[in-house]
Length: 161
Image (cartoon, rainbow, N blue to C red; front, side, top):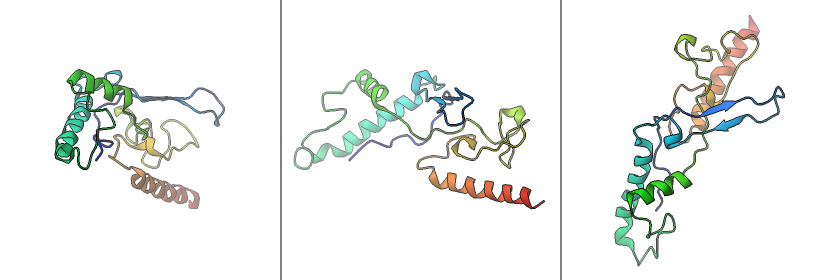
């Protein structure tokens, strides 16, 4: 049993991706800004993960010691609300950087048109997970494939004109 995937949707919109060089091969600076560092002022994201740990513990309680010798992480000794929250802050991570160049009207914060062109910029399209206005949930690769297909159709349509 694991609590590895506990929160598929977040209210946090506090991360950023910043271009650090005019060289397109240079990696951008990526700051995820989890929990209090981000925009989840109510603490819902942090509490959801702590609640998930407690749920998995309740589900596995009857399996000890016959099937489960001991809890590996965070460990049976980590029990208080404060300690569980600190464990989550120290160990939680995400790898689906997305939503930094959302499709939508510029007036509402959108960066891209529906055909993936950057507003007020010529000859530049963005086609990756950054186009979503909100993360589409867990395991977003299928949604990214669909974005790629839609972008290919848009690019082909422009090329045939």
